[in-house]
Image (cartoon, rainbow, N blue to C red; front, side, top):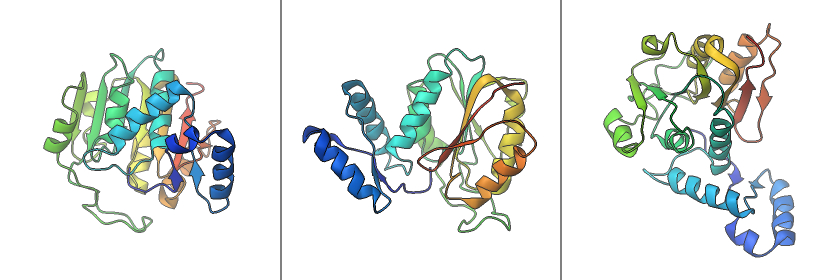
Length: 239
């Protein structure tokens, strides 16, 4: 949740002006590489409003409303897939809160140093150790009231021992760095149930993250879908 999106993910005013105005605005903004994401249907609009409330709190998160909406839908879509949920890279807890409101009774395991990024490697550009720090105390306070949530503070995968024997139905990665992405893929993908989903932020804009995905899936018949924001999606198709 680190890169400010280039999409306008709120269209309440435009929707009120009618579909022609919305479509014209979408087209014009598309010419300068910005987008209006349509949540015009009442149910979607209400969901987007709630997500916007979360994303704009404590203080504002840096994931887009549209990206958080994708995460929510993936959590709902994996409701019947066996396994627990994990997120690596919690930052201020925005996407964790979105997950909590969609996960039902499934356990959510949150992994973060809670002291910012570890030291970047030679392939990581534009980052510094300690960036995006938010204390465990602050995140726990923000997620107070969320049920069946477990916190694992420290450098992943050194903190993964408590879930080593678990299956996973949904995994969210937001780790920015090559080694962190690579380690998470090596740990989680073999433990994902068939039909489980993994979403990673930073895939589009951070070349080191894409490199980790390209290398890990180079010899696997597993599609990696680039999404319209800064995410990619993997659906486990076979064990």
